[in-house]
Amino acid sequence: MKTRSEELQVFVAVIDGGSISAAAAQMGQTPSAVSRTLARLEAKLGTTLVNRTTRRMDLTEEGRFFLEQARQVLRQMDELEERLAMNRQTPTGRLRVNAATPFMLHAIVPWIGEFRQQYPGIELALNTDDLIIDLLEHSTDVAIRIGELADSSLHARNLGCSPVQVLASPVYLRRHGTPQRVEDLADHCLLGFSQPETLNQWPLRHAQGEHWTIRPTLVASSGETLRQLALAGEGIVSLSHFMTHEDIRSGRLQVVLPQANNGHRQPIHAVYYRNTQLALRIQCFLDFIQRKLAIYACSVA
Image 1 (cartoon, one colour):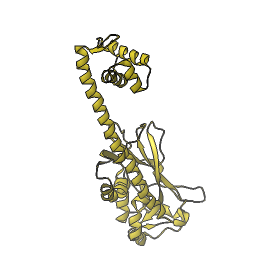
Image 2 (cartoon, helix red, strand yellow; image 1 turned 180 degrees about the horizontal axis):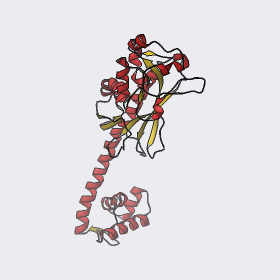
Image 3 (cartoon, one colour; image 1 turned 135 degrees about the vertical axis):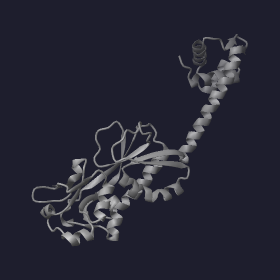
Image 4 (cartoon, one colour; image 1 turned 90 degrees about the horizontal axis):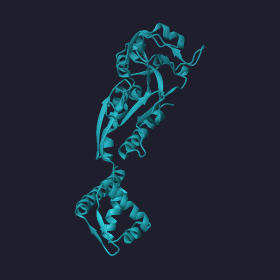
């Protein structure tokens, strides 16, 4: 059987106090409870630690050795608790973040300088993957996921949402004309996702429903690839605002069919393994990113 820290504390208190009754008073226990704990500890170790008589208590040779080790263990536990308490007040340590490439490039990287200034003790490791990963397998503390979440044993925190818009470059629209109705899209080059298919349901109201399912002319697995194709004038695309807001502001991309947009917003979640106490470095990062995401959500009328 394993020795518990409470048993070490009782043993040290008995020796320091000089008696079971003194240790009981110090620890707020009855003398009989302290005596039972000491007997249980000796039984676990299979040796006598203290020779007890009605007048005095003497450490055995094994007891003197065990006392030294017990003091060291309890001292290390105290130091560990103090270190953890400090970490709760000042976030430190390595934080491994995973996100899809577009989110990493457009919603995290631009703010890293500011984050590092606020939290210099956090060592960031930023990894990208456009597919859903196993956090444990990839040694990830927190992953950012866009869209609806599947059932999972992971803990999820909603960070906000990002509007989805249909966009095209001015060059493309000059060459091919601007669609006036949702049905006009059938005559245009449409840029879509190779997977999942749900991303090819554009947030456009029409006579038959709230979404328009496209048949892409050109497909890609990454939203960033589709963004670059749209910027190059290769077609019309539907992308989330967090990755296109600067393009729209600068005029590199224009919103197409705004009157038909159904207002759909993609939810953004952080997922991580369940813990009784979320590490402060993770808490600080999620709070920070959530504040920044609010900027994107509020920048769309």
